[in-house]
Every structure is written in structure tokens, then in C-alpha cells.
Length: 169
Length: 366
Image (tube, rainbow over all chains, first blue to last red; front, side, top):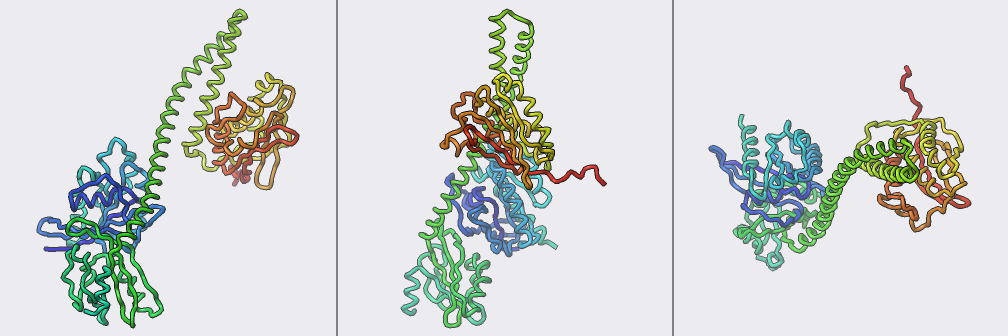
């Protein structure tokens, strides 16, 4: 079966949302940080079992004091990825606040939490408690590295699997 | 194609007219950027599902609908959205909804220069914020390291002071006894510095354990005076208290005594022999002001702006390490109080702290 799914990426500024999508869709990574304004839209196709899934990925600009995530962009999303920067513990708080704000709009659709920058584990600034709070609600919590590519595809596949399993009657 | 349609295309705009059935059709030939996106086969007049063509519009069209249905509405612009062209380049697009001759019109343009300008501004602000946050984290790490080092320095110091005190009591001959006294004084100063650093660290980093602290002010003042009485006697400076304060204030007992002894230490260091350091307690409507006054040289105005900042030394005081007043400020402010300095009438310094009076204690009632 061929399906089209809209998925969104949300999170604080500079956590690596655009880099994760760049790694997933184009297999590239750049050290140069370029802030996203508005939305960046990418598409890619994934095969999951008998399903061919066209992902329309909405990479939303980061949440901070200069710009806030527009809730309207999440409307119609089949699922979403909440991205945290493992080297900045405050990004976990931003992620939790975004989840609280977005859930009433997007409804109870599956989401995963990507704790990014796992290649910088020596500078890790998150303790277990900071992550534990996401484990109950998220379909999966994955440590990713856009730089090395570690577990990036797996994270999106896990989200798609969660979406498909919820869609299956 | 009309001349106007040519103009749209050459200006890089893709214009859609909304039909009565809600379907959109292009009004002009696709501009060059549509080719980069592989959407060059749009035909003017051809009905299209716009959301399929530009997924971003799923979030914009509901808002645009309001513009199209209201003759008085102006122009509605979308945020930027970014799509990737066939060659991997990013295209920065923006949509505008207008109403023209009673019909809905949607214009999509590629606007690289506005995007870059906006991105540059935002990126600068975000870069500064991230640099600031990184520096703060680094400072915090260094503070913790410093705390660990100072803490480790404190332990042997206690042994040194203890051993020297035992020697001092051993009635050594005059020259040796004098050296021991010098060593004890130096060690005591060292211990004072270590205590100050640890105080500041705790005040800076520890969350208050007691969420509604209260301290008996009179008792705290008496304890502070008692602790500093030997120093005052050695300096031949009198300690006097004016006013009584049988009230509880919002403060932690031990730290309030540390704040008061810090202020007394400053005053005692500058008070001339034969003068007095005066503690004046004034009850106000919802607070209490405790002023510590001396007849020393006072402070010159240029030193005042940074007086309560970290590592801001009291001028002319070689023993000042710039931590005591900083500790007093952050501690008092944590209790919702304040601290200040003013020249004393008739010469000298007057440091004051203002503490909120605690609500009557109902513990044990009912």
C-alpha cells in the first residue's frame, strides 16, 4: 500500500532538526549552523513491510525567545519528532514545554524523542531524569547523531512504524 | 498569455486564481524557480490541487480563506518556507493572499534576499544567545571545580589552626610564641577566605532548602555582635546597638548571622581606634532596616556602582577579597530583601540591609 504521511520536527533552536533531516534525506551533514526560518519541507520515501510511505517532513524553525513554533504547522501531522540537544539540558525543558503546547493541537498522534548529538557524548549534559519524563508518552526515545548518522534512519523508521501500527485497525 | 501574465512570470511570481468551486488555476506561465522544483509543467487555466503541489499551503490556505471572503481584508503574507530543488539548492518561498475583483488570488514568490536578511539577523541573535549559554555552562563547571578545590584546602587548614592553637597554649618562649601568633592569625585569615568562597558558592548554586525561612532578628544581631566582640576589643572599637527588633524576618538564621558578621567585619576594619561601630535597627511598615555604621573614611563615589559585585574589592582594604558584600547581596536578595550603601552623616560608611517581616507564626496553633 502507498501512503503519504506528514511528520513534523520540533525542538529548541540549534538542536539539529535540519541536520537530522539533511542526514536522512540527502545523507549529508554540515558543521555550519544555519538557522531555519518558517518551515523547511522535504520529502522522501520509506519502505516498511508492504507499505511504501512517502514522508513529507516539516522541519519547523526552532523555539526560543526570538521565534516560536507556529502550532498551525502541526495540523494534519501523522506524527512528529521532538528533538533535544544532549549537550544542552535546557533543550529538554523546551521540548517538554513544546509537547504540552502542541498536544492539544495535533492530538494523540505518535511522536518520538530524538536526543541528538550523541557523537558529543563526552559533553553530555543530560541526566536520566531529564530523559525519563519523555519515556511514558513517546513511542521511542532514541539517541541520534546527525553528524555520524547514528540511529537517524532508525528514529524515523520507529516513528513511521508507530504511525502505521496506530493506523492499523 | 496577457502582458500582465508575462510581467508576473518575469518578476518570478506564480499567480493562482481561485475559482468559485474553490479550485485554483495558474494565471501565468511558471517562473524559472518552478523549473528548479520540477514543476514547470503548470498550464495557465489548469485546475490544480494546490496543497499537493505545495504542501506548505495546507497551513496557509485556511487563513487565506478569511482574506478572500472579506472584501475589507488586505493582503495576508505567509511565513517563509523552504523547498529543495532538483540540484539540491534551497528555494525560499512566500505566499500572499489578496482579493481582486471579488476573486481570491494567491501569489507565490521566491524571495532569497529577504530570507537571507532575516536569517542573518536571527542567526546573529541566536549565535549570541548560544555563546552566552555556553559561557555560562563553562563558568558553572569552573565554579564547581573551584568549590571542590577550596573545600579540599579547608580540611588541612582546620588541622593547622588546631595544632597551632595547641602550641600557643604550651607557653613557649617569647620569640616562638610570637611566631605562633603570627601563624595563627595568617591561618585564621586563610580560613575566613575559604569560608567566604564556600559561602558565595553555596549562595550562588544551592536552591534554598527552606521555602519559607524565618529568623528571629534580635537573636541573630546578638549572635553576630557576640562573635565579633573579640575583634572589636582588639581594635579598641566599641559595638553599639540602637533600636530593638523583636520580630521574625524572612531569612535563614545561620546565613543572616553570616551577612551581619560580614557587614560588621567591614566596619571594624575601617573604624578608627577609639570610635564605635553602630548597629541601627529601624522597624518599617512591612520590613526592618538594619544599618551598620562606622567612622572610617567611607567610600568614594566611583567605587559604588560595582560595590556589591563579585570580586569587587573594598578600596583601600588589602584584606578585602571582593566576596563578602557579594555574598550579602545575593543572600539578602534571595529572601526578597535589599542591600545598599550610603555615606554616613558626619563622615564614615553606612551599609544597610532591608529584610521583610515574616507573617505571624501560626505553627503550633489550632
